[in-house]
Amino acid sequence: MSLHVDAGAALAIDGGPPVRSAEAPWPRWPVAAPGAEDMLRQVLHSRQWAITSPHEGELFERRFAEMFAGYLGARHCVPTDHGSSALVIALESLGLSEGDAVLVPALTWVATATAVLRAGLLPVLADIDPRTGSMAAGALSEHPDIRAVVVVHWACGMADVPAIDAVAAPRGIAVIEDAAQAHGARWAGRAAGTLGRLGCFSMQHSKVLTCGEGGAVVTGDEVLAGQLEELRADSRRYRGRTPVGELPLAETATTMGANFCLSEFGAALLCAQLPLLDAQHVVRNRNYELLRQLLASVAGVRLLDRPPEQDALSLYEVPIIFDPLPAGSGNTWAAAALTAEISMRAYPPRAPLHRSPLLQPWKKSTIAGLAGRFAARHRDRVFPHAEYLARHAVLLHHSAFLGAERDMRDLARAVAKVARHAERTAGRD
Image (tube, rainbow, N blue to C red; front, side):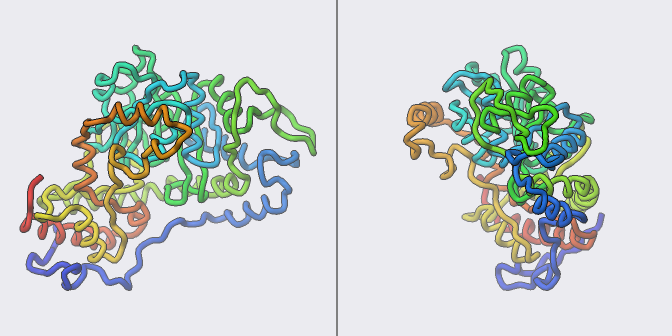
């Protein structure tokens, strides 16, 4: 597919003309669904603003749980107030012992690891597959003492959970999917979040399915589902038929929980937004494939590999990987250069967790024991594949892919322009 780029044009960051004028708008996020306002109004006047409200009628939280479980093909869904809370209660439901080791990838948002600490467990970092950005099955063999693994589907790709589970299951290791970036992605026809024992989702503002702040855990295990309900609602789970005016939660107390409940306003918004998701996937995925074709002949730049088993994409962030970068410059330069060309924010991934300023458990006195073990466990360890992507990828938010073909052509021309400058002035790492 042809892509015309003026090889001699100066970069916009250096004073040259940009590929795209700042007056040409990009799609904005979030996009309110038709009917969202009406559903929010229903909650406002229902006198049921939370699942702990006296019963007046059907709760949107129950409606969303059924809708999302049906969308994924899961048996059970337990909504939560945040994706981080979903990870915490998923880990707590496994019945592990205090301080047990849990494997997490080094390239992910910090909550994947801090949730492990919040559950009283020890996060152990693993390097990632450089082709996909996600953990691979081989990572488990390096850590004989782990009791669980949190597999993250990163950016717009999926980890090979069946391969990981094939290694984990004989060792009694529970597999949790962190599918916060993968709503609607599928592996050989099965939805992300349903491949492991538990699947965790975030519905935070930037996610493809959002209510501002929210989350959910899905599972096929009925016993775990009941435990999850208690863990997120102060040891209470849903009772059966509830008389008007009575609380819909019964104090079953088979375990001790906390309050991680999703509000009715968030649940109503998710009920409105979920029916839009697949149509948005169609637009984003079509544009992503066009971008892949346009960049196929551009030297020095690439997208993540897509395993053939991943038969449905869910774009959250799209990594553009610049293999050569100018001598003395990193992907912070590439992100700034790309932003200047297209007037849309492009940004580097966050630092891998072993050097993240957000993961410093020794700054929290109540987990001093775990913090000491975490520091000792990771002293002198290196994560070269996570480091490479963190230093060479530039990310684009999924909203950029909700536009038209022209947007992808502008984006491809801008990427090619930056890549050609990088090749001409390249340093090597």
